[in-house]
Every structure is written in structure tokens, then in C-alpha cells.
Image: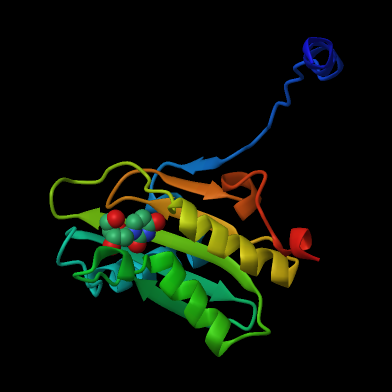
Length: 174
Ligand code: THU
């Protein structure tokens, strides 16, 4: 038993894998490409219609689809907290239900808190990343993701794979 354990460790020498990831940073909303800036403004508008009476943390998401449509969503909270949903998932699920065969090209997110000024970019939560990944893999085309707070810098990820390396997808279920 002791020998077997020793063998296991010597055969499986600790090997480290480095993950490389890259994000782009824009100084502000004003430095975005025009189309993306318009999407950010659509996300801000959607954000203000959020139903967030419990957190007072409003999030808006705007999607640009391959057919030129813009789909927006915002966070929808619930007195039973986990029954609520984030803005990103409201938007991608709506796009998935209304335009099932249309690719999502960009996802743009804006967040605002009533407690303090958010001047740092607010990234999508883990559950939203997993949901976004499902659609990116389904459409076999990267989704560009832009996110910001109420003011300040905007971060861009070229694909959900940048924000969710080692993602779990349906290939494991085949
Ligand atoms: N929220 C989003 O809408 N998107 C995120 O990626 C992070 C969190 C919402 C969920 C909840 O309504 C509030 O923000 C506070 O967590």
C-alpha cells in the first residue's frame, strides 16, 4: 500500500499549466467604437428599468445580433433571492428564445449601484459566464463582451473563453 502510494506520487509529478488570457481596456465609454458605444447606451437605458429593490444594484445588458437586432435585458430580483435573474441571462435567454438561429456578436454590460458610484468595470458573474458560454459554443462564433460600471473604464473580452477558461460544455455529455 505504502509502495503504491509512493509510486502514484512519483508517476504524477506536479505539473503546472499556465493559462494566458488577454483583455482590452478602453479609457471610457467615449473611446468605444461608435456601434459599441450605442450598445452601451442601450445597456444603460435597460439598466435603469431593472427590478432591483433588494440590492439596489442595477445591471443592464445589450446584445447585438447578427441580423442587426439589439436585444436588452436587466436584472430581475425576487423576495426569494435565488429566484431572481441577472441582466446578462435575461438578455441572452430572450435572444435565444426570440432569435434561436441568429448569432450573438456582442454583449455589452453596464452596472450602477445606489450605494456608491461604481467607477470600476463590473464583470458578469460566474453563472452568467456559463450561460453565455452555452450560446457561444452553440453558434460556433465568439461573443465579444464589454463591461463597465457607472463611469470609468470599459473592459473588453474577445470571447467568453477569456472570462471562463476551462469551461464545461455539452461535449462532455456526448
Ligand atoms: N447581477 C447581474 O445582473 N449581473 C451580474 O453579472 C452580477 C449581478 C445582479 C443580480 C442581483 O440582482 C444584483 O445584481 C446584485 O447581485
